[in-house]
Length: 174
Image 1 (cartoon, one colour):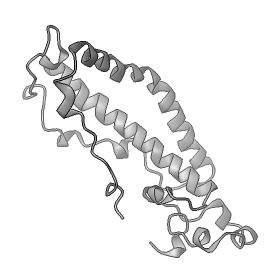
Image 2 (cartoon, one colour; image 1 turned 90 degrees about the horizontal axis):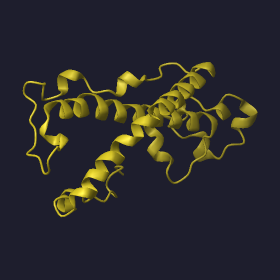
Image 3 (cartoon, one colour; image 1 turned 30 degrees about the vertical axis):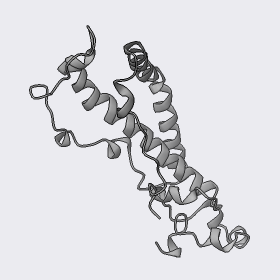
Image 4 (cartoon, one colour; image 1 turned 135 degrees about the horizontal axis):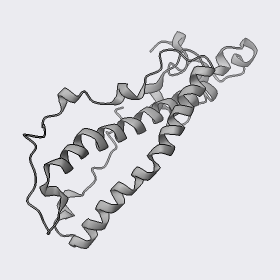
């Protein structure tokens, strides 16, 4: 089953123009305040990355593997479209605002969180190869063997579905 067959589409555009300007402005502040947490998220991601390297991981993806190629961006500073301002001083009327958002903030932030989630899934698959109802979502972070698979006496203790899961056992097939 595909991950998004059960997804419900978030409704946001239908209601945007009905929202008071002050709420939309407050929303803009709230979307950028988490920038202050980025150093901590970056630190956490790199600690996870080095944890995996130190326990023997090879072929780990890097943060840069999750960042879209700059050539895939449709607009440049010269061609960047802007929006008609909805109130005086709206940042949406400035090209630089969109370039900074679309070239730096969004792709690097999304890539950072996707990279971190990928590595946390690897950590989970390595240390805890026990099936649960959300574990199929960890399949983008497959590993060759879990910690439990490398010791025969512990491997024998695993339930069949845990021992033979292709997410953390490459000999189980794909």
